Length: 573
Image (cartoon, rainbow, N blue to C red; front, side, top):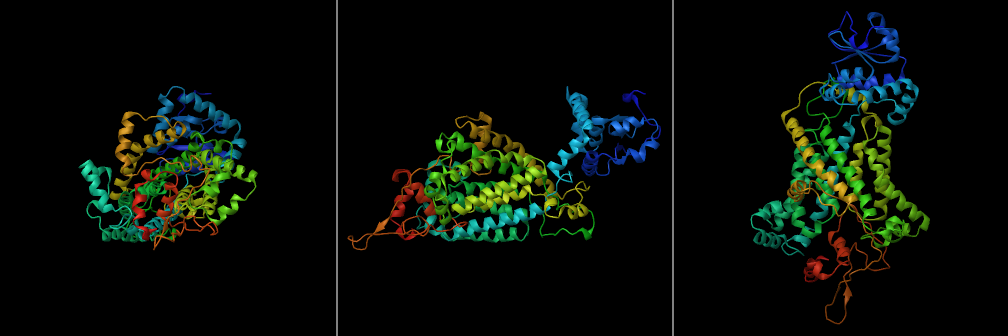
Protein backbone atom coordinates (compact mmCIF):
# COMPACT_ATOMS: atom_id res chain seq x y z
CA UNK A 1 0.00 0.00 0.00
CA UNK A 2 1.40 3.44 -0.86
CA UNK A 3 2.30 5.87 1.91
CA UNK A 4 -0.87 7.83 2.72
CA UNK A 5 1.06 11.04 3.31
CA UNK A 6 2.36 10.95 -0.30
CA UNK A 7 -0.78 9.70 -2.02
CA UNK A 8 -1.80 11.64 -5.13
CA UNK A 9 -4.35 11.15 -7.89
CA UNK A 10 -3.60 11.55 -11.57
CA UNK A 11 -6.88 13.29 -12.42
CA UNK A 12 -7.34 16.12 -9.86
CA UNK A 13 -10.38 18.39 -10.05
CA UNK A 14 -10.56 22.20 -10.10
CA UNK A 15 -12.34 22.13 -6.72
CA UNK A 16 -11.53 20.02 -3.66
CA UNK A 17 -13.68 16.89 -3.45
CA UNK A 18 -14.67 15.29 -0.14
CA UNK A 19 -15.65 11.64 -0.50
CA UNK A 20 -17.69 9.91 2.22
CA UNK A 21 -19.46 6.64 2.90
CA UNK A 22 -23.02 6.90 1.61
CA UNK A 23 -24.11 4.09 3.95
CA UNK A 24 -23.01 5.98 7.08
CA UNK A 25 -25.90 7.87 8.69
CA UNK A 26 -23.53 9.85 10.95
CA UNK A 27 -21.52 10.96 7.90
CA UNK A 28 -24.66 11.94 6.00
CA UNK A 29 -25.87 14.18 8.85
CA UNK A 30 -22.60 16.08 9.22
CA UNK A 31 -21.82 16.27 5.51
CA UNK A 32 -25.00 18.35 5.12
CA UNK A 33 -23.66 20.82 7.67
CA UNK A 34 -20.23 21.01 6.06
CA UNK A 35 -21.76 21.34 2.59
CA UNK A 36 -23.67 24.40 3.77
CA UNK A 37 -20.69 25.89 5.58
CA UNK A 38 -18.33 25.61 2.61
CA UNK A 39 -21.02 26.66 0.10
CA UNK A 40 -19.59 26.25 -3.42
CA UNK A 41 -15.94 26.03 -2.32
CA UNK A 42 -15.94 22.21 -1.90
CA UNK A 43 -17.71 19.41 -3.79
CA UNK A 44 -19.07 16.33 -2.03
CA UNK A 45 -19.85 12.81 -3.21
CA UNK A 46 -20.09 9.26 -1.84
CA UNK A 47 -17.32 6.73 -2.40
CA UNK A 48 -19.94 4.39 -3.91
CA UNK A 49 -20.21 6.90 -6.76
CA UNK A 50 -16.60 8.06 -6.98
CA UNK A 51 -14.35 5.11 -6.07
CA UNK A 52 -13.94 3.91 -9.66
CA UNK A 53 -12.74 7.35 -10.74
CA UNK A 54 -9.77 7.33 -8.35
CA UNK A 55 -8.11 3.95 -8.59
CA UNK A 56 -4.99 5.23 -6.83
CA UNK A 57 -6.92 5.22 -3.54
CA UNK A 58 -7.46 1.73 -2.03
CA UNK A 59 -11.13 0.91 -1.45
CA UNK A 60 -10.38 0.04 2.16
CA UNK A 61 -9.48 3.68 2.77
CA UNK A 62 -12.90 4.79 1.54
CA UNK A 63 -14.52 2.36 3.98
CA UNK A 64 -12.31 3.46 6.84
CA UNK A 65 -12.43 7.27 6.67
CA UNK A 66 -13.33 10.42 4.81
CA UNK A 67 -11.12 11.21 1.83
CA UNK A 68 -10.32 14.71 0.56
CA UNK A 69 -8.81 15.16 -2.89
CA UNK A 70 -7.27 18.62 -3.09
CA UNK A 71 -6.92 20.64 -6.33
CA UNK A 72 -3.20 19.87 -6.53
CA UNK A 73 -3.98 16.15 -6.55
CA UNK A 74 -2.81 15.35 -2.99
CA UNK A 75 -5.08 13.17 -0.89
CA UNK A 76 -5.69 13.44 2.87
CA UNK A 77 -7.81 11.27 5.14
CA UNK A 78 -9.92 11.19 8.30
CA UNK A 79 -9.70 14.20 10.68
CA UNK A 80 -7.23 15.97 8.45
CA UNK A 81 -9.67 15.66 5.54
CA UNK A 82 -12.36 17.35 7.64
CA UNK A 83 -10.11 20.23 8.67
CA UNK A 84 -8.64 20.78 5.20
CA UNK A 85 -12.10 20.85 3.60
CA UNK A 86 -13.46 23.35 6.15
CA UNK A 87 -10.37 25.54 5.72
CA UNK A 88 -11.64 26.53 2.28
CA UNK A 89 -14.08 28.74 4.17
CA UNK A 90 -12.29 31.61 5.93
CA UNK A 91 -13.90 30.96 9.31
CA UNK A 92 -12.52 27.39 9.22
CA UNK A 93 -8.90 28.20 8.41
CA UNK A 94 -7.88 27.96 12.07
CA UNK A 95 -8.70 24.24 12.14
CA UNK A 96 -6.14 23.27 9.49
CA UNK A 97 -3.61 25.67 11.01
CA UNK A 98 -4.09 24.13 14.46
CA UNK A 99 -3.75 20.63 12.99
CA UNK A 100 -0.36 21.61 11.53
CA UNK A 101 1.04 23.80 14.29
CA UNK A 102 -0.60 23.25 17.70
CA UNK A 103 1.19 20.48 19.65
CA UNK A 104 -1.13 17.59 20.43
CA UNK A 105 -4.04 18.89 18.31
CA UNK A 106 -3.46 16.38 15.51
CA UNK A 107 -3.03 13.46 17.94
CA UNK A 108 -6.25 14.27 19.80
CA UNK A 109 -8.11 14.77 16.52
CA UNK A 110 -6.96 11.43 15.12
CA UNK A 111 -7.87 9.63 18.34
CA UNK A 112 -11.32 11.22 18.47
CA UNK A 113 -11.98 10.56 14.81
CA UNK A 114 -10.92 6.94 15.15
CA UNK A 115 -13.22 6.42 18.12
CA UNK A 116 -16.21 7.84 16.24
CA UNK A 117 -15.37 5.85 13.11
CA UNK A 118 -15.41 2.60 15.11
CA UNK A 119 -18.77 3.45 16.73
CA UNK A 120 -20.68 5.15 13.93
CA UNK A 121 -24.11 3.85 14.92
CA UNK A 122 -23.70 5.09 18.47
CA UNK A 123 -22.38 8.44 17.25
CA UNK A 124 -25.35 8.72 14.92
CA UNK A 125 -27.79 7.97 17.74
CA UNK A 126 -26.17 10.61 19.99
CA UNK A 127 -26.27 13.14 17.17
CA UNK A 128 -29.97 12.54 16.55
CA UNK A 129 -30.68 12.70 20.28
CA UNK A 130 -29.00 16.10 20.65
CA UNK A 131 -29.68 17.72 17.27
CA UNK A 132 -32.56 15.81 15.72
CA UNK A 133 -32.63 14.99 12.01
CA UNK A 134 -30.80 18.15 10.93
CA UNK A 135 -27.41 19.25 12.28
CA UNK A 136 -26.96 22.17 9.92
CA UNK A 137 -26.23 25.47 11.62
CA UNK A 138 -29.58 26.93 12.71
CA UNK A 139 -31.11 30.07 11.25
CA UNK A 140 -32.97 32.59 13.39
CA UNK A 141 -35.18 34.67 11.09
CA UNK A 142 -38.33 33.84 13.07
CA UNK A 143 -36.61 34.47 16.41
CA UNK A 144 -35.27 37.85 15.28
CA UNK A 145 -38.62 38.97 13.95
CA UNK A 146 -40.61 38.11 17.06
CA UNK A 147 -37.91 39.07 19.54
CA UNK A 148 -37.74 42.58 18.09
CA UNK A 149 -41.53 42.84 18.08
CA UNK A 150 -41.67 41.69 21.69
CA UNK A 151 -38.94 44.16 22.61
CA UNK A 152 -40.98 46.91 20.96
CA UNK A 153 -44.02 45.92 23.03
CA UNK A 154 -41.93 45.94 26.22
CA UNK A 155 -40.49 49.37 25.43
CA UNK A 156 -44.05 50.56 24.76
CA UNK A 157 -45.21 49.25 28.14
CA UNK A 158 -42.25 50.88 29.91
CA UNK A 159 -42.79 54.30 28.32
CA UNK A 160 -46.58 54.35 28.79
CA UNK A 161 -46.23 53.13 32.37
CA UNK A 162 -43.83 55.97 33.16
CA UNK A 163 -45.77 58.58 31.20
CA UNK A 164 -48.75 58.41 33.55
CA UNK A 165 -46.47 58.85 36.59
CA UNK A 166 -43.69 61.14 35.44
CA UNK A 167 -45.21 64.41 36.69
CA UNK A 168 -45.76 63.10 40.21
CA UNK A 169 -42.35 61.42 40.43
CA UNK A 170 -39.84 63.82 38.88
CA UNK A 171 -41.89 66.66 37.42
CA UNK A 172 -41.44 70.25 38.56
CA UNK A 173 -43.93 69.70 41.40
CA UNK A 174 -43.13 66.03 41.88
CA UNK A 175 -41.53 64.09 44.70
CA UNK A 176 -37.97 64.46 43.38
CA UNK A 177 -37.97 67.12 40.62
CA UNK A 178 -35.34 66.52 37.98
CA UNK A 179 -35.24 70.29 37.43
CA UNK A 180 -33.69 70.58 40.90
CA UNK A 181 -31.67 67.36 40.81
CA UNK A 182 -29.57 68.03 37.71
CA UNK A 183 -28.43 71.59 38.64
CA UNK A 184 -27.46 70.34 42.10
CA UNK A 185 -25.36 67.55 40.57
CA UNK A 186 -23.74 69.96 38.15
CA UNK A 187 -22.76 72.32 40.96
CA UNK A 188 -21.19 69.43 42.84
CA UNK A 189 -19.46 67.54 40.01
CA UNK A 190 -18.84 70.23 37.44
CA UNK A 191 -18.38 69.14 33.80
CA UNK A 192 -18.10 65.48 34.88
CA UNK A 193 -21.82 65.54 35.60
CA UNK A 194 -22.63 65.28 31.87
CA UNK A 195 -20.75 62.00 31.43
CA UNK A 196 -21.76 60.52 34.79
CA UNK A 197 -25.44 61.30 34.17
CA UNK A 198 -26.01 60.95 30.41
CA UNK A 199 -29.50 62.31 29.76
CA UNK A 200 -31.21 64.58 27.26
CA UNK A 201 -32.75 66.34 30.25
CA UNK A 202 -29.61 68.46 30.42
CA UNK A 203 -31.16 70.40 27.50
CA UNK A 204 -34.48 70.78 29.31
CA UNK A 205 -36.02 69.35 32.45
CA UNK A 206 -39.46 70.85 32.09
CA UNK A 207 -42.62 68.77 32.39
CA UNK A 208 -43.27 69.32 28.70
CA UNK A 209 -39.88 67.88 27.78
CA UNK A 210 -40.41 64.84 30.03
CA UNK A 211 -43.69 64.24 28.23
CA UNK A 212 -41.92 64.70 24.90
CA UNK A 213 -39.40 61.98 25.85
CA UNK A 214 -42.18 59.59 26.87
CA UNK A 215 -44.22 60.33 23.74
CA UNK A 216 -41.18 59.88 21.49
CA UNK A 217 -40.51 56.56 23.19
CA UNK A 218 -44.06 55.42 22.48
CA UNK A 219 -43.72 56.42 18.81
CA UNK A 220 -40.37 54.65 18.35
CA UNK A 221 -41.74 51.57 20.13
CA UNK A 222 -44.58 51.39 17.60
CA UNK A 223 -42.09 51.72 14.74
CA UNK A 224 -40.11 48.80 16.16
CA UNK A 225 -43.24 46.68 16.62
CA UNK A 226 -44.17 47.17 12.96
CA UNK A 227 -40.60 46.59 11.77
CA UNK A 228 -40.05 50.10 10.41
CA UNK A 229 -36.39 51.16 10.57
CA UNK A 230 -35.76 48.73 13.45
CA UNK A 231 -32.09 49.51 14.04
CA UNK A 232 -32.62 53.28 14.01
CA UNK A 233 -35.67 52.88 16.25
CA UNK A 234 -33.59 50.88 18.74
CA UNK A 235 -30.91 53.58 18.85
CA UNK A 236 -33.57 56.19 19.58
CA UNK A 237 -35.28 53.99 22.18
CA UNK A 238 -32.03 53.41 24.03
CA UNK A 239 -31.22 57.13 24.17
CA UNK A 240 -34.75 58.05 25.28
CA UNK A 241 -35.03 55.39 27.98
CA UNK A 242 -31.52 56.07 29.29
CA UNK A 243 -32.41 59.76 29.54
CA UNK A 244 -35.55 58.97 31.55
CA UNK A 245 -33.72 56.42 33.70
CA UNK A 246 -31.16 59.01 34.73
CA UNK A 247 -33.85 61.63 35.27
CA UNK A 248 -35.92 59.14 37.28
CA UNK A 249 -33.20 58.89 39.97
CA UNK A 250 -34.15 56.48 42.78
CA UNK A 251 -37.41 55.55 41.08
CA UNK A 252 -35.42 53.80 38.32
CA UNK A 253 -33.10 51.79 40.56
CA UNK A 254 -34.61 48.51 39.38
CA UNK A 255 -32.87 45.63 37.65
CA UNK A 256 -35.45 45.41 34.87
CA UNK A 257 -34.70 49.01 33.89
CA UNK A 258 -31.00 48.31 33.38
CA UNK A 259 -31.90 44.95 31.80
CA UNK A 260 -34.09 46.76 29.26
CA UNK A 261 -31.29 49.21 28.51
CA UNK A 262 -28.69 46.47 28.08
CA UNK A 263 -31.05 44.39 25.94
CA UNK A 264 -32.03 47.39 23.84
CA UNK A 265 -28.41 48.40 23.30
CA UNK A 266 -27.27 44.92 22.25
CA UNK A 267 -30.32 44.55 19.99
CA UNK A 268 -28.99 47.39 17.84
CA UNK A 269 -26.36 44.94 16.59
CA UNK A 270 -28.97 42.22 16.04
CA UNK A 271 -31.62 44.20 14.15
CA UNK A 272 -31.58 44.45 10.35
CA UNK A 273 -30.51 47.80 8.95
CA UNK A 274 -33.41 48.45 6.62
CA UNK A 275 -36.27 50.92 6.36
CA UNK A 276 -39.32 48.75 5.69
CA UNK A 277 -40.25 45.26 6.91
CA UNK A 278 -39.78 42.35 4.52
CA UNK A 279 -41.45 38.97 4.83
CA UNK A 280 -39.69 35.74 3.92
CA UNK A 281 -41.03 34.28 0.68
CA UNK A 282 -39.31 31.40 -1.14
CA UNK A 283 -40.89 32.43 -4.44
CA UNK A 284 -38.81 35.58 -4.75
CA UNK A 285 -35.56 33.86 -5.56
CA UNK A 286 -32.65 32.41 -3.68
CA UNK A 287 -30.30 35.35 -3.14
CA UNK A 288 -30.10 36.75 0.35
CA UNK A 289 -30.67 40.51 0.60
CA UNK A 290 -27.74 42.20 2.27
CA UNK A 291 -29.98 43.64 5.00
CA UNK A 292 -31.80 40.39 5.81
CA UNK A 293 -29.07 38.27 7.35
CA UNK A 294 -29.25 37.50 11.03
CA UNK A 295 -26.21 38.95 12.78
CA UNK A 296 -24.30 36.19 14.54
CA UNK A 297 -22.48 38.80 16.61
CA UNK A 298 -25.73 40.36 17.82
CA UNK A 299 -27.24 36.96 18.55
CA UNK A 300 -24.16 35.95 20.54
CA UNK A 301 -24.22 39.15 22.63
CA UNK A 302 -27.90 38.66 23.52
CA UNK A 303 -27.35 35.01 24.44
CA UNK A 304 -24.48 36.06 26.70
CA UNK A 305 -26.86 38.51 28.36
CA UNK A 306 -29.49 35.79 28.96
CA UNK A 307 -26.81 33.43 30.27
CA UNK A 308 -25.42 36.10 32.61
CA UNK A 309 -28.86 37.16 33.83
CA UNK A 310 -29.99 33.67 34.78
CA UNK A 311 -26.70 32.30 36.13
CA UNK A 312 -25.98 35.34 38.30
CA UNK A 313 -29.57 35.38 39.60
CA UNK A 314 -29.12 31.82 40.83
CA UNK A 315 -25.56 31.93 42.09
CA UNK A 316 -25.91 35.10 44.18
CA UNK A 317 -28.69 33.43 46.15
CA UNK A 318 -26.26 30.76 47.32
CA UNK A 319 -23.29 33.07 47.90
CA UNK A 320 -25.22 35.81 49.72
CA UNK A 321 -24.99 34.05 53.09
CA UNK A 322 -28.77 33.68 53.35
CA UNK A 323 -29.46 30.20 54.74
CA UNK A 324 -33.06 30.22 53.47
CA UNK A 325 -31.80 29.38 49.96
CA UNK A 326 -29.57 26.55 51.18
CA UNK A 327 -32.24 24.95 53.38
CA UNK A 328 -34.91 25.56 50.70
CA UNK A 329 -37.17 27.64 52.96
CA UNK A 330 -37.02 30.91 50.93
CA UNK A 331 -40.57 30.51 49.60
CA UNK A 332 -41.88 30.07 53.13
CA UNK A 333 -41.49 33.87 53.31
CA UNK A 334 -41.32 35.17 49.75
CA UNK A 335 -44.96 34.99 48.68
CA UNK A 336 -46.14 37.34 51.46
CA UNK A 337 -42.98 39.40 51.98
CA UNK A 338 -42.40 40.36 48.32
CA UNK A 339 -43.09 43.98 47.27
CA UNK A 340 -46.36 43.60 45.35
CA UNK A 341 -47.84 40.09 45.62
CA UNK A 342 -50.72 38.91 43.45
CA UNK A 343 -53.79 37.00 44.55
CA UNK A 344 -52.17 33.88 43.09
CA UNK A 345 -49.20 34.54 45.36
CA UNK A 346 -51.62 34.31 48.30
CA UNK A 347 -52.78 30.88 47.10
CA UNK A 348 -49.17 29.78 46.47
CA UNK A 349 -48.35 30.68 50.07
CA UNK A 350 -51.02 28.20 51.19
CA UNK A 351 -49.40 25.33 49.26
CA UNK A 352 -47.82 22.42 51.22
CA UNK A 353 -44.40 23.03 52.71
CA UNK A 354 -42.82 20.22 50.69
CA UNK A 355 -44.01 21.86 47.49
CA UNK A 356 -42.47 25.20 48.47
CA UNK A 357 -39.15 23.50 49.18
CA UNK A 358 -39.35 21.65 45.86
CA UNK A 359 -40.09 24.98 44.12
CA UNK A 360 -36.96 26.57 45.62
CA UNK A 361 -34.83 23.64 44.45
CA UNK A 362 -36.40 23.83 40.99
CA UNK A 363 -35.74 27.59 40.81
CA UNK A 364 -32.06 27.14 41.73
CA UNK A 365 -31.66 24.30 39.26
CA UNK A 366 -33.17 26.32 36.41
CA UNK A 367 -31.17 29.45 37.22
CA UNK A 368 -27.79 27.79 37.83
CA UNK A 369 -27.65 24.64 35.66
CA UNK A 370 -30.02 25.26 32.76
CA UNK A 371 -28.27 28.44 31.46
CA UNK A 372 -25.33 26.31 30.29
CA UNK A 373 -27.69 24.56 27.87
CA UNK A 374 -28.06 27.88 26.04
CA UNK A 375 -24.82 26.91 24.28
CA UNK A 376 -25.78 23.25 23.79
CA UNK A 377 -27.05 21.47 20.65
CA UNK A 378 -30.60 22.13 19.46
CA UNK A 379 -32.66 19.83 21.66
CA UNK A 380 -30.91 20.76 24.90
CA UNK A 381 -31.13 24.42 23.90
CA UNK A 382 -34.87 24.12 23.31
CA UNK A 383 -35.29 22.34 26.62
CA UNK A 384 -33.47 25.25 28.28
CA UNK A 385 -35.82 27.72 26.59
CA UNK A 386 -38.86 25.79 27.84
CA UNK A 387 -37.64 25.61 31.43
CA UNK A 388 -36.58 29.26 31.56
CA UNK A 389 -39.91 30.42 30.13
CA UNK A 390 -41.84 28.20 32.56
CA UNK A 391 -39.94 29.68 35.51
CA UNK A 392 -40.67 33.23 34.35
CA UNK A 393 -44.38 32.44 33.97
CA UNK A 394 -44.48 30.98 37.49
CA UNK A 395 -42.80 34.10 38.89
CA UNK A 396 -45.12 36.41 36.93
CA UNK A 397 -48.24 34.66 38.23
CA UNK A 398 -47.28 34.98 41.90
CA UNK A 399 -45.77 38.48 41.91
CA UNK A 400 -46.02 41.85 40.12
CA UNK A 401 -42.59 42.24 38.55
CA UNK A 402 -43.55 44.74 35.89
CA UNK A 403 -42.06 43.88 32.47
CA UNK A 404 -39.13 41.86 33.86
CA UNK A 405 -40.67 38.46 33.12
CA UNK A 406 -41.80 39.52 29.63
CA UNK A 407 -38.30 40.77 28.82
CA UNK A 408 -36.66 37.56 30.01
CA UNK A 409 -39.14 35.48 27.99
CA UNK A 410 -38.38 37.64 24.94
CA UNK A 411 -34.66 36.83 25.35
CA UNK A 412 -35.58 33.12 25.54
CA UNK A 413 -37.16 33.39 22.07
CA UNK A 414 -33.61 33.69 20.72
CA UNK A 415 -33.02 30.03 21.62
CA UNK A 416 -35.71 28.87 19.18
CA UNK A 417 -34.36 28.39 15.66
CA UNK A 418 -36.37 28.32 12.45
CA UNK A 419 -36.52 24.53 12.22
CA UNK A 420 -38.86 24.46 15.22
CA UNK A 421 -41.45 26.78 13.68
CA UNK A 422 -41.54 25.44 10.12
CA UNK A 423 -39.53 28.32 8.67
CA UNK A 424 -36.15 26.65 8.28
CA UNK A 425 -36.61 25.19 4.80
CA UNK A 426 -38.21 28.32 3.39
CA UNK A 427 -35.51 30.53 4.90
CA UNK A 428 -32.75 28.31 3.52
CA UNK A 429 -34.35 28.12 0.07
CA UNK A 430 -34.60 31.85 -0.16
CA UNK A 431 -31.54 32.96 1.73
CA UNK A 432 -29.19 30.00 2.01
CA UNK A 433 -26.98 30.01 5.10
CA UNK A 434 -23.76 30.33 3.16
CA UNK A 435 -25.06 32.51 0.36
CA UNK A 436 -22.38 34.83 -1.01
CA UNK A 437 -22.63 38.55 -1.31
CA UNK A 438 -21.57 41.66 0.51
CA UNK A 439 -23.33 43.65 3.19
CA UNK A 440 -24.78 47.11 2.99
CA UNK A 441 -22.46 49.71 4.49
CA UNK A 442 -24.60 50.40 7.62
CA UNK A 443 -24.90 46.66 8.22
CA UNK A 444 -21.15 46.27 7.78
CA UNK A 445 -20.39 49.05 10.25
CA UNK A 446 -22.88 47.55 12.69
CA UNK A 447 -21.15 44.16 12.50
CA UNK A 448 -17.71 45.68 13.08
CA UNK A 449 -19.04 47.77 15.97
CA UNK A 450 -20.69 44.67 17.41
CA UNK A 451 -17.34 42.88 17.31
CA UNK A 452 -15.73 45.77 19.19
CA UNK A 453 -18.55 45.71 21.77
CA UNK A 454 -17.99 41.97 22.19
CA UNK A 455 -14.25 42.42 22.74
CA UNK A 456 -14.83 45.19 25.30
CA UNK A 457 -17.80 43.74 27.22
CA UNK A 458 -16.99 40.03 27.25
CA UNK A 459 -14.18 40.35 29.85
CA UNK A 460 -16.43 42.57 31.99
CA UNK A 461 -19.28 40.06 31.76
CA UNK A 462 -16.88 37.27 32.69
CA UNK A 463 -15.80 39.19 35.76
CA UNK A 464 -19.40 40.02 36.73
CA UNK A 465 -20.29 36.33 36.57
CA UNK A 466 -17.19 35.46 38.58
CA UNK A 467 -18.14 38.09 41.17
CA UNK A 468 -21.41 36.23 41.72
CA UNK A 469 -19.35 33.24 42.87
CA UNK A 470 -16.86 35.41 44.78
CA UNK A 471 -18.79 38.47 46.01
CA UNK A 472 -15.75 40.10 47.65
CA UNK A 473 -13.51 39.77 44.59
CA UNK A 474 -12.07 42.87 42.94
CA UNK A 475 -11.59 43.19 39.17
CA UNK A 476 -8.21 43.97 37.59
CA UNK A 477 -7.56 47.72 37.54
CA UNK A 478 -7.78 48.03 33.76
CA UNK A 479 -11.09 46.17 33.70
CA UNK A 480 -12.42 48.24 36.60
CA UNK A 481 -11.55 51.47 34.76
CA UNK A 482 -13.36 50.37 31.60
CA UNK A 483 -16.37 49.21 33.60
CA UNK A 484 -16.49 52.50 35.49
CA UNK A 485 -16.68 54.42 32.21
CA UNK A 486 -19.44 52.20 30.83
CA UNK A 487 -21.47 51.94 34.01
CA UNK A 488 -23.21 55.29 33.51
CA UNK A 489 -24.70 54.03 30.23
CA UNK A 490 -26.09 50.79 31.74
CA UNK A 491 -24.90 48.68 28.78
CA UNK A 492 -23.13 46.01 30.84
CA UNK A 493 -24.61 45.14 34.23
CA UNK A 494 -24.68 42.60 37.02
CA UNK A 495 -27.92 40.94 38.11
CA UNK A 496 -29.32 39.02 41.05
CA UNK A 497 -32.89 39.41 42.30
CA UNK A 498 -33.75 38.50 45.91
CA UNK A 499 -30.27 37.36 46.86
CA UNK A 500 -31.31 37.86 50.51
CA UNK A 501 -34.84 36.85 51.41
CA UNK A 502 -36.97 39.25 53.47
CA UNK A 503 -38.41 37.20 56.32
CA UNK A 504 -40.77 39.81 57.77
CA UNK A 505 -42.95 42.54 56.37
CA UNK A 506 -43.29 46.11 57.52
CA UNK A 507 -45.69 48.54 55.87
CA UNK A 508 -45.60 52.31 56.01
CA UNK A 509 -49.07 53.74 56.48
CA UNK A 510 -49.51 57.42 55.60
CA UNK A 511 -52.40 59.23 57.23
CA UNK A 512 -53.86 62.65 56.71
CA UNK A 513 -56.35 64.82 58.52
CA UNK A 514 -58.50 67.76 57.50
CA UNK A 515 -59.10 68.94 61.06
CA UNK A 516 -56.15 67.55 62.99
CA UNK A 517 -58.48 65.32 64.98
CA UNK A 518 -59.64 62.55 62.72
CA UNK A 519 -56.82 60.87 60.80
CA UNK A 520 -57.48 58.59 57.81
CA UNK A 521 -54.96 56.48 55.86
CA UNK A 522 -54.00 57.25 52.30
CA UNK A 523 -54.77 54.01 50.51
CA UNK A 524 -52.31 53.22 47.71
CA UNK A 525 -53.79 51.68 44.61
CA UNK A 526 -51.33 48.79 44.37
CA UNK A 527 -49.26 48.63 47.56
CA UNK A 528 -50.66 46.31 50.25
CA UNK A 529 -52.51 48.28 52.89
CA UNK A 530 -55.93 47.24 54.13
CA UNK A 531 -55.52 43.58 55.14
CA UNK A 532 -59.10 42.89 54.03
CA UNK A 533 -58.30 43.93 50.47
CA UNK A 534 -57.10 41.19 48.09
CA UNK A 535 -53.69 41.73 46.43
CA UNK A 536 -54.09 43.50 43.10
CA UNK A 537 -52.58 42.70 39.70
CA UNK A 538 -50.74 45.56 38.01
CA UNK A 539 -48.00 43.97 35.89
CA UNK A 540 -46.62 44.73 33.35
CA UNK A 541 -47.31 48.30 34.55
CA UNK A 542 -44.92 49.41 37.28
CA UNK A 543 -46.33 51.72 39.98
CA UNK A 544 -42.92 53.05 40.93
CA UNK A 545 -43.97 54.88 44.09
CA UNK A 546 -45.72 51.77 45.42
CA UNK A 547 -42.56 49.76 44.77
CA UNK A 548 -40.38 52.38 46.43
CA UNK A 549 -42.54 52.29 49.55
CA UNK A 550 -41.58 48.64 50.06
CA UNK A 551 -37.89 49.57 50.05
CA UNK A 552 -38.53 52.55 52.35
CA UNK A 553 -40.07 50.20 54.92
CA UNK A 554 -36.76 48.31 55.04
CA UNK A 555 -34.75 51.43 55.92
CA UNK A 556 -34.94 54.77 57.70
CA UNK A 557 -36.12 58.22 56.55
CA UNK A 558 -32.49 59.34 56.41
CA UNK A 559 -31.81 56.57 53.89
CA UNK A 560 -34.85 57.62 51.82
CA UNK A 561 -34.81 61.43 51.48
CA UNK A 562 -37.47 61.27 48.76
CA UNK A 563 -39.93 60.04 51.42
CA UNK A 564 -39.80 63.37 53.24
CA UNK A 565 -40.71 65.12 49.98
CA UNK A 566 -43.62 62.70 49.58
CA UNK A 567 -45.03 63.79 52.95
CA UNK A 568 -45.38 67.34 51.61
CA UNK A 569 -46.91 66.16 48.32
CA UNK A 570 -49.52 63.56 49.41
CA UNK A 571 -51.69 64.12 46.36
CA UNK A 572 -49.24 62.00 44.35
CA UNK A 573 -49.55 58.95 46.63
